[in-house]
Image (cartoon, rainbow, N blue to C red):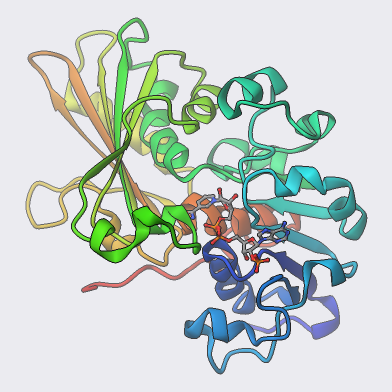
Length: 352
Ligand SMILES: NC(=O)c1ccc[n+]([C@@H]2O[C@H](COP(=O)([O-])OP(=O)(O)OC[C@H]3O[C@@H](n4cnc5c(N)ncnc54)[C@H](OP(=O)(O)O)[C@@H]3O)[C@@H](O)[C@H]2O)c1
């Protein structure tokens, strides 16, 4: 591939670059053919080399963290901050860059009343909600091409949405019956800061109900699928990376497996990062997060109980990639007219 001349590279900054999502953004953007990373912030690590927080980047860059107060203007800013921080300072970030890609939950919901219901407080910058396009290219590709502001996606919401959308778009689901979703998640969903529950003796080996009801990502699933009867339960399992959503729904009418094949193929064929994982034999017959670590792929698969009409739809992702930084870079690619897949081609590892 021909390299892009340095003076035409997009100059990007990453705010919150010492965190897990920020670290993945650094990894992706340092290797991106059309981008140069000009600044990466961390309050606690200011002055240190970025590889000191992200040792996988050793030898790849001489970039040092700067304090967030010292951010300068650039072409695009990625925000990978704790909940509420992007919204609180959105005017400042927008003044620094014409394009913002936020990874937090701050600008995902269109409706400030829905935000208040799920997040328990008024939105700090409600006027900004309509300026952001929800950053899931699989549903908002065209809108993202002309967007200046893209929101993040919830990792659990993304796994759920990508499992549900093929069914919903094909009209196969009975929307009068509850749609139940169990999502198994890895520890990196909690971010880089340690807590009692992430202490190794407490977290290792866990199969822990984290949010049996009431998970906030439900709001994103309702917003994207248009469904109002989706119920999420989140369980923490023995993984560092990965989310696996298992949807249980009932068919709206008697269907055969070929109807599901048709629906899944119709959805996946338009999506460079969505693959169908459904095999008759072998170990990896259905989607599994293990082989997706570090990649931007979402694997989707299904099974049908013909007698009862029960559909099981499954989606696996790497929460830090398709569930956060990978989708964010995919959004940037669309917003800037780059190839949608640029910088995102890593296929994951096997064995791992
Ligand atoms: N982890 C996931 O799987 C995942 C998936 C999807 C979306 N997200 C969202 O992505 C965001 C980042 O998540 P994460 O897991 O990367 O969190 P994290 O590991 O805790 O990182 C947070 C980053 O923000 C910086 N920071 C904290 N307060 C700040 C402030 N007031 N101003 C500027 N920088 C500040 C931190 O560094 P300093 O304190 O050193 O400045 C750190 O670099 C969150 O909103 C999260 O909900 C996470």
